[in-house]
Amino acid sequence: MEKRIFKDKVYSLLAKMIQAMANPHRLEIIDLLGQGEKTVEQVAKETHMAVANASQHLQVLKSANLVEIRREGNFIHYRLANKEIYKSWQTMRELGLERIAEMEKLINDFRKKRNVLEAVRIDELVDRLTSRNIVLLDVRPAREYDDGHIPDAINVPVEEVTSQLKKLSKSKQYIAYCRGPFCVFADEAVSVLVKEGFRAKRLHEGFADWKSKGLPVEVTS
Image (tube, rainbow, N blue to C red; front, side, top):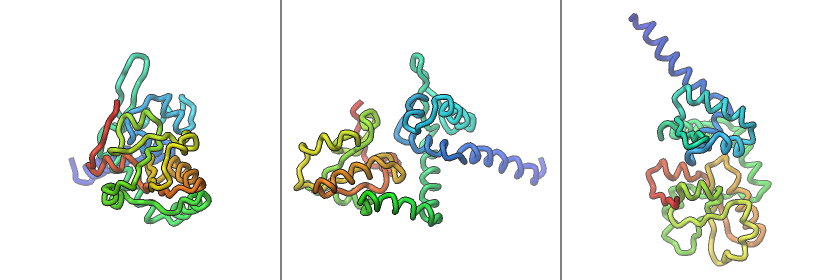
């Protein structure tokens, strides 16, 4: 095989894989599956897509060997094929945050309206977790929390934050986290807490980012 033909074929194969990711819905699915495996129905619900559309996007990712399946009864569970796929998504995400000014402005404007401007990075959180005054709130759905969470984090799904306020002490400082920088659960939780007089910030990254750094993880299921 000639060198030019070899290079054209290699780059074409790589381009097909990248093309499979180059869709806003499929990028969101990759971000979502970074939390753990999910059925088509769960993906559809979390991404506000019809089940048929979610299934179609998952099939594209599967054809590109980016996701794998596990059958359980009548359900098919999808998961990322390996941890490097989420790391690739992380790299693209951080590149976008660094190089696309419109994206940074969009995020800042969104959080400014909710009074959630300050965020804590994972490295800073690790240093601060030794303090007994810090309380970690995992505001993701209970199933995702059960599948894995930051050690000692308390699960308060975002829709339950308001009803759980009486159980929280205002003498503590709260750091809420969810799925990642583009997940709004933590923003919504912090907005409620701050409005009620609590000291609260969101974690800039999410659980999948914590896990990808090789940091300790707790599982309850």
